[in-house]
Length: 594
Image (cartoon, rainbow, N blue to C red; front, side, top):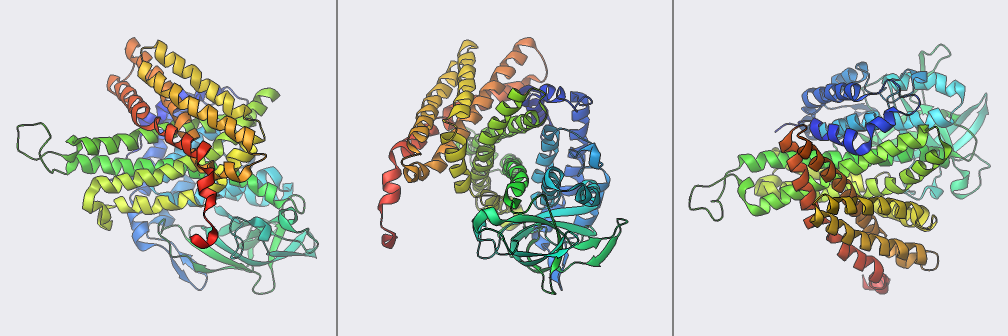
């Protein structure tokens, strides 16, 4: 089975739910229109299906080889990356100022889904480059921008972010890497970083590392972290590459999944100090890096949804191909394809409904990010930024938690064959597992959601979005889709009560509220996903009434939204009970009793 880009659904979400026309109306997007975006997505789909997807299993089997600091990638990856870069895909969303094509983030997100679904290990390299480019474009000096950004935008050089150290996982206050000034605006960087994705490889001639480190007089904790550009090869004044910098990959991790993506331990300064250049002001590196991390967190949400799509496609193919057992209720004793069996259908519908809800909510967030960045009205910019801030931890956390369930259902549908590596179903489950961990675990996303994004804001954005969902519930009932409207309203009762609980109790009982933070994140994902599928159902019903488009496609939208209302929205009741009443039992058991 190979990957097929879900172009029809992507087109539907872009135009009917995310609001491509509204994004196209923003300043700087004058050349953007549905026809152009269709052409971009179709061309991206061809590359994803024909070049990148066939390398997914090869990369999983071969992994990467490290020899004396040099990482050799899996067969076919270097050639595929060169084609990817030469065709301009790295630069799609990059500002024309740096040689990019200036497409809005929503359009880039649609192509990112295709890269992640076809081969998530491959996709991480350009996605991290774009994150590094984003951080530098906002915070670096003009000299640094001129030196590095055009080459990164073209894909000739790639980028990384170096945060984690052996003693400091997500707690960046413990970062110990050092930066010592040596004059002429340069610094000598020393220290070790771990878990550096695509930190070393053979696909490009230079790698631009963004490194968190401390200056000699830096204050303790996160307030004393600075950000530095540390290239693999130094760059001469004329733009040519100079001497090899004192940075080296000393090992690559042996991982559960994403085998084709080298996860490196990077050592800086073994020969006296790696040359680095300060980005922005001293001791503000963490805030600068968060520019990259927010983009990365949204990108990981895309990864989760995309891997789920790939696992779903494989499960559908297998369910249609695998013949086993007679059909229940039939007089015909002949065995049938397992897709005829009710429990297989339940699992496939669970996968399909969640993926469509996630795609809609994720693309809606991408459009909100474009509006927050480019809307000409300051109040609108602020409103959409608040929406982005609220939704990113949900998109990152909910999508990645659910892809683990979805990929596991894919294995279950394969039965015993799903446990056999040759079928490929297990790879999706293995690849998916990291998404709920890196760029901030689900627990970290959930703490961010309840604290900064809900309690500190007194629930303002949360309640505004729930109000939008309530309006959709009313429209569903008016349109003759009362069962969906009632299910969404019932879930909204739970969303509102838990939001009030978070706002009312977080200040005085932060540990109690935190005990239910992940259930709260999941509840919000389910409810807001139901909001989006409710919107999809309204569009589909109207299209059918008007006789527009593919009737089978829109009928499927209605059925999928009904399944979501019947099977997934009711989960909010159990989650709300855990959030409101479950804190005491979470914290009660003494440490020594574990």
